[in-house]
Image (cartoon, rainbow, N blue to C red; front, side, top):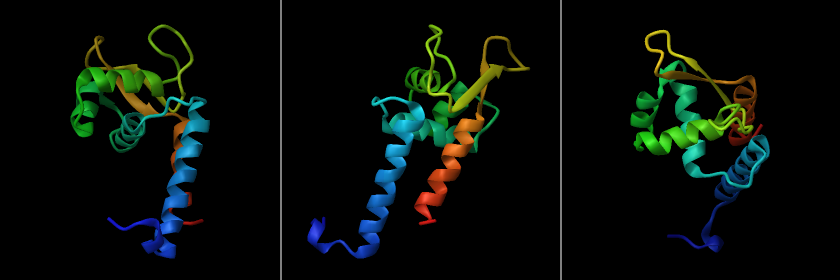
Length: 122
């Protein structure tokens, strides 16, 4: 692996962009407890809107339990009623009262738009 002296200017620009994205994610979630799992779950929801927890867990290559925790953290409110990050919303599935389906919230869409702009260098 290259050390920092061997990174190209493009590499450094990408690293700075990723740092800005992660800082924005921390701010958007209003929490210091931001994990890669949360970020991955958000990205999977964005590509699988309207899907249930099991489908999202499979796409994340994660357990249903871990995905459940991530979805609750990203949602507007956690199971206990505490405010979540508000980056996704959930509603009861029209197919089953026992499951929820997930969508990006307006806040989540805005965050991902900023993320893309940052990564594109805009």
